[in-house]
Image (tube, rainbow, N blue to C red; front, top):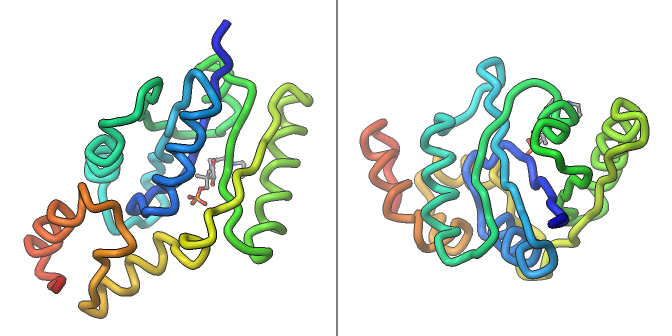
Length: 167
Ligand code: PNS
């Protein structure tokens, strides 16, 4: 059976850092599911539909990749997808504490059936986060080097509709 992994996240929006990890995961695993948390209680800048479109646009070239969404507990979704491995990215030491807790909770809740493995961010993307993208967007800054090139124009168009300018 093909070894599958889930890369879960908010992806609000997907960044070059995310894309780097997705591409690297695809080179290691036969089946990679990038899944967007669809939680109406969590306030996001982009809708679930927009976040999925952004991901699809920038991952067209990758084989063995599925773009999906989930709600509820990640471990329930993983069981539904018949996947036992979650991958998460680690940028700096600041990510570590939170990620270790999440990995432990998911392992315990799944009665040790789900493992989390970490991909360390490539050095050039270590400073990038979706939060940073949103902050720069709100202050009318340029996100060209932070979001994947395939989605830059689409993000610009989306935000012009909501009257946030980008340069
Ligand atoms: O991109 P993010 O916001 O860091 O991703 C966090 C995410 C979505 C992976 C995590 O919050 C999640 O899976 N939430 C779903 C609910 C759940 O399973 N919680 C228990 C583990 S933290």
